[in-house]
Image (tube, rainbow, N blue to C red; front, side):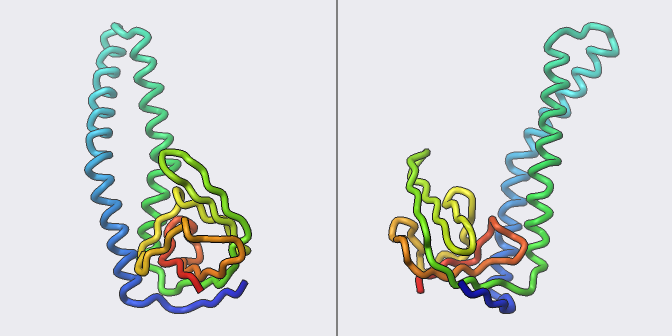
Amino acid sequence: MTITIQPLSDHEKKLLRRAFKFRVIFAIIFLLPLFSGMILMFNETVDQFSTSTYDGMSFFSIALIVLVCFLVFKYVIPFFINSYKNTKETKKLIISTVVTNIEKQFYRGVRYVVETDYRRIDSYGISILDNIPIFLFAEVYIGMRIEIHCLENNKIDILRIKKV
């Protein structure tokens, strides 16, 4: 296993910016209705408590709002902060490694978990931003040499995986 540090190309910086923009648009489309519903639910719950007409569903509403806020602050906000930090990166790691183990699982399609000398790559847990030429997990075999282009502090976004 060898690790090389190189500067990011303009194309790779553009890919990282595009991924961040796509994620923000996706969040606006799906999280805005969720937060609108949460605000309406919160207003209704406050009204019920202020007029003393609360019931068991009022407490369920409070628990649901707290749970959603907890999950947003624990997972969603750090994800977007890291995605934004990725757009400011200037260097990438190029890891030349060997596949040591492959697991093929059937879970809503075929899921591949590839273990290398460097790290574990879960096909459901990563996003390959530049997949040209296409890297197919179905063609991976034990002992295969691959080259992983990734950022140092990000295990989710992989710029490219190539066969060597």
